[in-house]
Length: 321
Ligand SMILES: [Zn+2]
Image 1: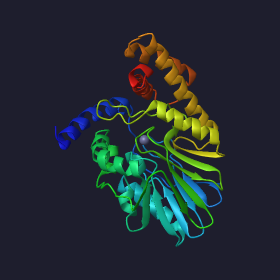
Image 2: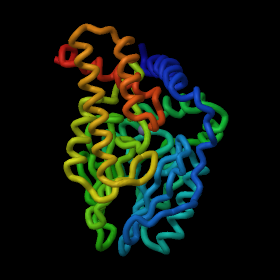
Image 3: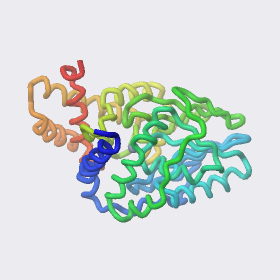
Image 4: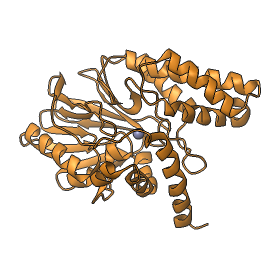
């Protein structure tokens, strides 16, 4: 099958899977509002997602001569608002943009920043944007009119600077560390660390008040890895930053990292112990969903538990070795 045929198939399958996972909810308009902007540290603010699905937390980090924007919001109209805010905030300082991973609400507004900001990302994310971006744009348009509306006119931007594993961005008196984590929630996740303020932007490696999002759509999108994600969370939680800005949900402290780590560990262990006893995948899904919902009755996104179990079944020690 040629590449476009494979992509078309991927689209159909992924759309259905995502649709089942997400379309059960009435999708509110995924609109970024520049309200409730919160200063987390000196010259470092977050435009909060206000618990609207498909709106990410967006960061703006300043130094003496430059300002870095983290995430664009979904589509050009949201990104225009973010850019306008960033321009006002920067007051003439040079603008940079980065995104934590290629998913539409995080990166599909970067086109608006072209010529205004220097866009830099890790290599795996740049690859995700190129290879999977068009498919995800089509898939997300199927999630309903409010989402499709925000995606009108989307063109996938190319980064100006692509780095491999690590990039230290000097904003003037403040160095921000961009770090590729390796495959976890997607193939090309990165985190953004602001060491002087002890703030960490995690993208969708962390969602506050929500079950971890596993975009697990075999056989067409299987980049998410529960075991690698857990390893990343163990590392991030050990570092214990003061402030954690999750991809979605309220800004918090190191507890957010530990919560995701503990959830992923339990999800893996409970899945694998049943796999060891040759329990069928559907039974595992039912048992573990009940267990996890009982443990976290207030967490949203229960439909992602099943996807996580599916992913971890494929990574079971007997399969993976
Ligand atoms: Zn994501």
